[in-house]
Length: 290
Ligand code: SAM
Image (cartoon, rainbow, N blue to C red; front, side, top):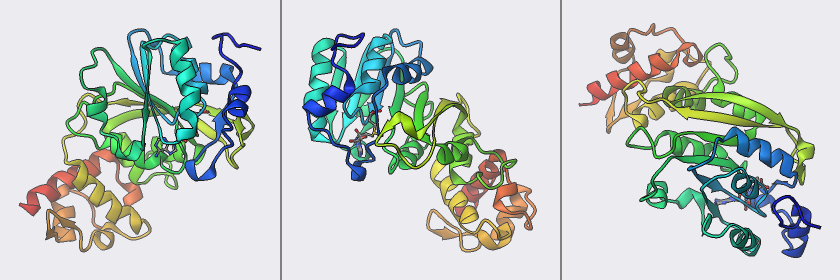
């Protein structure tokens, strides 16, 4: 039996190439091409667009992206067992699928897309164990605007909520929400139930759209990250306490002076400070560290 793209159904592909899912690689595969089509359309329109996909696995989303008209898909996959299955997709779409064997955590993204003309977009059903690390890396990228024009990514619902959180959602708001809110506008597009995956994960997943802001509030991403780490690691404490001992550029800063110069009350807690407040803290901290 063949599917709309003339390739065998994904269950057959997995059987043929003996791709039993490995938990250590965060493998929860999508076999339903209607669902992967929906994710690909959420990343569209795709004409003229190069997609960077992380973890294509047996290729369910890869096939959907190609079927929906992506000019090119560059797919980074760590599991060598998947490469033969992906080569079959590449044969069906000559010149449009570049398979990059390797670890996404060690990929030089700018080098990967160097020389490509036209928009580059990230779309992936991410391995859940490295999803937030990858996202933080893309959001901290320099220079800005980044090499991608949008990200459409699948995360566990709980992570998706942390990405889109603001101080109004106190429990979810944290380091990831500040970083994402600073550099991008994000929204949850739709949920995907555990039953859609093989094997099914324990929790619901969500597809999130993350669109880079052209001009985020100016501040140094590393300093912003150092401040949010300090502030949210002791989120129940007042900032005058949680920012004690904060070191920037090798210099320990006085928390009270930092907060006063930034115009932030010393008795506030991290979860009460919005993205603009954290960006101000990062700018003042950089000045104080000179
Ligand atoms: N895209 C496929 C789908 O939707 O059915 C598979 C998604 S599965 C959640 C995650 C994929 O990421 C797996 O194929 C896994 O082998 C791959 N992966 C895990 N860690 C990786 C890493 N560090 N670098 C690249 N790929 C990785």
